[in-house]
Amino acid sequence: MTTIRLNNTKTRKREDFVPIDPENVRLYLCGPTVYDRAHLGNSRNVLLFDVLFRLLKEVYGADHVTYVRNFTDVDDKINARAAETGREIGDVTAETIGWYHDDMDALGAQRPTHEPRATDHIPHMIAMIEDLIAKGHAYAADGHALFAVDSYAEYGALSGRSIDDMIAGARVEVAPYKRNPMDFVLWKPSDDGVPGWDSPWGYGRPGWHIECSAMSLELLGESFDIHGGGNDLQFPHHENEIAQSACAHPHGEFARYWVHNEMLQVEGKKMSKSLGNFFTVRDLLDQGVPGEVIRLVMLGTHYSKTMDWTETRKVEAEGTLRKWYGILHGHGFGPDLIAALKADGKWQADAEFLGVLANDLNTSGALSRLHVLSKGKTPVALAGFAHGLAMMGLVNDWAAIPQFDGGEAGAGVATAVAERVDALLADRAAARGAKDWARADEVRDILNAAGVQVTDVGGQATWAPGPDFDAAKLEGL
Ligand code: AMP
Ligand code: ZN
Image 1 (cartoon, protein in one colour):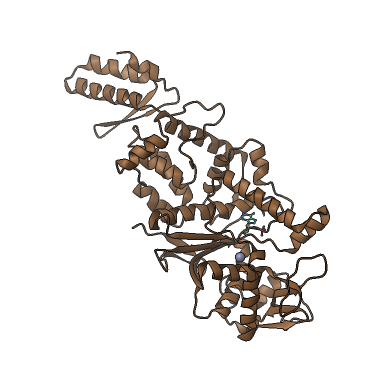
Image 2 (image 1 turned 30 degrees about the horizontal axis):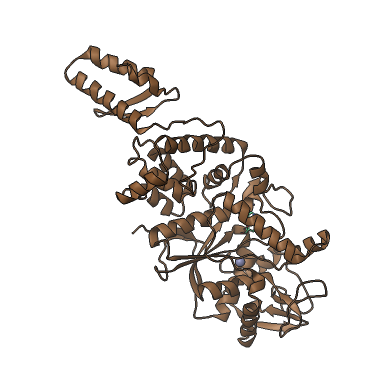
């Protein structure tokens, strides 16, 4: 079985991934607050976790992975958006969830197993807060419930910050009802016109952090395998999730592995709504950039590195995909061929591709391996390439392999043509063996005229179609 290795933020080490239960590998990704379209940066961990989800399914089996990503549908930004536009909150969140699905679907991201909405789990949050109060980790004050940071000695361990650093670095809200300025809100009162629920602390709504602790507990249990989100969520959001879950369930482990992605930047600054330096996934799609191109650019940089979206990368990705899809089309890849490859036991991941990807989700390394695999000359030789494209989410429907506008067959070579080149090379080898130099030169000239690039290594000839490849010219003999 392939060993997956992950760079675990919790231990700051790259570790072998050992699931709690290989029959049910469980992961949680903090999802969007639904008041507006996702910007391109927001798609980065969606795509990373999508690749992780696919990889885990490949290794542990498609029915043995549970992936949860929440929708934060109660939040002051949502309330503000509804107030600004004079719309119902429920309309704003429903519309935004629809957009999110459309946009992430267009990027080829598979839907998670569960997509809980915070507002469907309010009783679970209330129960967890009551439990924290009963255990002495939280207190009620002035219509609020607050987590007492002093009650949890390991607070700050994930992000490696001291309490002083945290106070200095975060916009810690000082409030008269807090015992310690670091204490964070579990529940807060709601005025009229703002969503609220009855609770032991009065009519109000939950803080943000408690929702992920309550929903992951409900859907994944008190110990699960992998938790993720952007680096920017390590503190305070993930520290607070850990504090809540560890204190409510001291015998559980909460998440064993934490995977955090770096930021998508614009001119050296994090792309963000608040800085206004963002464009949305939908903006790109509307400009005619195919979802697969966006996906390939995003997966071209390892998640642990910051990255920029650049025009050059987009053009390169487009060229690569045009070539790759041309190869698939040229070799007749489609549902029938895939079914035939499956029947012959040939529909398998390339071991090197899988090994590279499993090594801390090295998507850029895996793409380099696909470039090598794309040079196969027959459907069977290309099976690992096609399988790899599917695992990277670059082909999601074998009945409709994308073909970009204006794209020609690219470097794709039909089987009959590949067989013809192989026959010519065999002919050339035989002529050389028989010292029939005139014949050997004749064959070479045909290959040159057709734009076939031949490389002789250790007596073995390999070939690739060159930029001026013209199959018609192979027929000259
Ligand atoms: P937000 O809507 O800002 O709460 O972010 C939702 C998700 O997107 C979180 O997991 C963030 O870490 C992530 N995120 C926000 N901005 C960026 C960015 N510029 N690059 C990568 N991830 C981001
Ligand atoms: Zn969360």
